[in-house]
Image 1 (cartoon, rainbow, N blue to C red):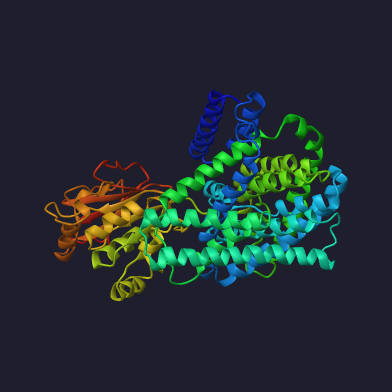
Image 2: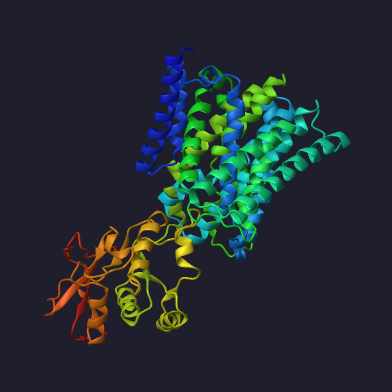
Length: 591
């Protein structure tokens, strides 16, 4: 290829990867639905985007490096200390039964369905055991199932990525170093153990290097992120040099160690790493799908559809049934878990990496791994995307419509506001930092959020489950301003804050944007002073005459959606709505 063709191919790949993800976010669908068809079409229509022509034999190594970075980032989100209670048991059983049954079924039926040897079918089986949060999370955000179901499926999808990567690397060596799949032989077990040992040693080295750079040197956010990236790439490449495809194991182990060993001084947010991983995912999907030709899909199309039917209608329901028996879940929740198992980025990336290595070794049938994986990914994602919402509604596992409020603050007027919002029929959750404030909230019977709110808010892997709006009303204006900025990405809906005093000299509050609750006249200290002088919150139908000297704070729509009055908009009540007012004289309605 000429220099101009290479530049055009690289630019087009980046544009397609980015544009597809932007379109997917606007449509609220998994990016895979857009990325895979776009990459496939681009590969079929033009020659300049084909990675084998753009990068030649280095493409396989770049895929391996990219997958290592993705798996390291996935490992960072796996704080196993947070997997507790009944969720731990259910997720553990889903992983064990899911991996075993999926592998055994695919390895059993694939030799006859795709005309491939047993060892290649075993490789395909290991590749297709993974799901992944990059596919599951967007689907669940659209469906909005109950918190319990969402938590189980997110944990399962997140944990299958590293498990699938490790098993894939180990299985690759178990089948690539011999012409048989009999892992009971001493030679096979030896190869298996060597691969695992190399990956674990690499993970230990990576952990030690990151301990030195992040804990001892105490690097900041930018240099800390760069040191993580350099360490993962170096350790992964070193392991791959020693033994092929063991770098994935090292990357996963390093990520798991960093997220679970106490004392690591990890940057709270990793915007550069998050952006890089998002770009890598897009580039990988466009590049990998462009290598799948229509000619390679035709022979495996019908068998792949049959395999999808087996996985969706037989394997996943059986796994869910075995895993959720006597779990306390309702019949609808168990059934929905049995109807949610799409394949994602790790399946595509490992299929590309491992199948290319097996093809280079001249193993027959290995060329079918990638097109079959491509079709299974597309088929499962499309099927679940189209059916998940109606199935969830039919099973009764969709979270009730309306607003779940997180009200942050523990002053008397804030707690009374929470009581008023709850009396208006809203689901209210509160958080406060001081013990006396938390006791005040408990006395009202309002649900109290646990944990460190700001630590949760700035954790990219965390999510405030079910919260659709946040109102920040603590007596620290700088905290309100800072939290309003960092919490935006972890909440489904908007984040509001009460306004600081007009003459505030705070460090953050006077200079931070965002929508201010109740406008500039009802700032925090004014609300608190009026409450101390006897003003109270009043809840009444919008059709009733408004009392004199009362300010409208919120409008609760007939469908229980909450519309606050803010600095930027004045909410107009409609017939059937309820209003929350602040008045200088308590009324019977406010009681």
